[in-house]
Amino acid sequence: MSIKVQPMGPYQTNCYIVTKDGKDIIIDPGVDATEWVKENVTNPVAILNTHGHFDHVWSNAELQRELGVKLYTPKEDDMLLRQSSWMPDLPPSTPDVLVEPDEEFDIEGIKVKFRHFPGHTPGCSTIEIDDAMFSGDFIFEKSIGRTDFPYSNPADMKKSLEKFMQLDYDKTIYPGHGGTTTIKQEQRYAPFWIQQL
Image 1 (cartoon, rainbow, N blue to C red):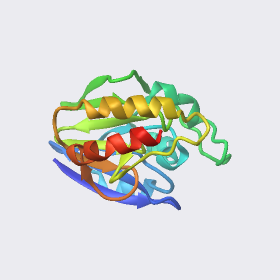
Image 2 (cartoon, rainbow, N blue to C red; image 1 turned 90 degrees about the horizontal axis):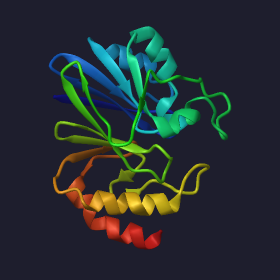
Image 3 (cartoon, rainbow, N blue to C red; image 1 turned 60 degrees about the horizontal axis):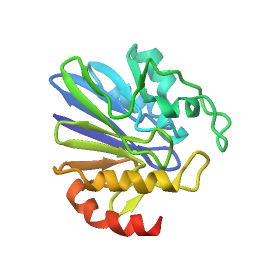
Image 4 (cartoon, one colour; image 1 turned 30 degrees about the horizontal axis):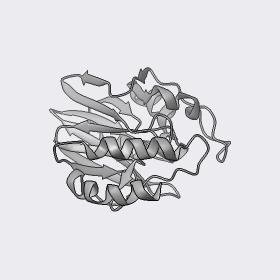
């Protein structure tokens, strides 16, 4: 499995292309991601969103149309794909698949696990493929997603961090902003963030 990453737009939001067995999965295609994605895929099979904030979903509709692949989005964030209170010119997109909390998929032989960690947004999720966890804006290196946005919920974030603490395995975390970390490393910092909430 190979992973390509490119920070996109003014918030440098990481767009990922995961390639396995000759198939490409696009994760969080943000602002102006379309051209980079098209230059770096040969056999795209799906677009996945970790959550619905505009800087992670901006290029959804354009890529759905140009690549002819399905869009998977956590169902609780569906409404965020059509309107953004602080980005009114967001190009609206419509998921082909509304992902239930903690749902798993087999996408053309690639096993994909969404793990629901609400708080930053109602549908905020991580996406696990093999030994990688794409964490969106749930968790970063030594930090967590903000809970002061519309639809954010600090109490939900606290429960999500407690759930995260219970994971009994390690994987590399590829966050929505910044560099990589690991589950085990961020489990060391999670109690601090739980206290802050």
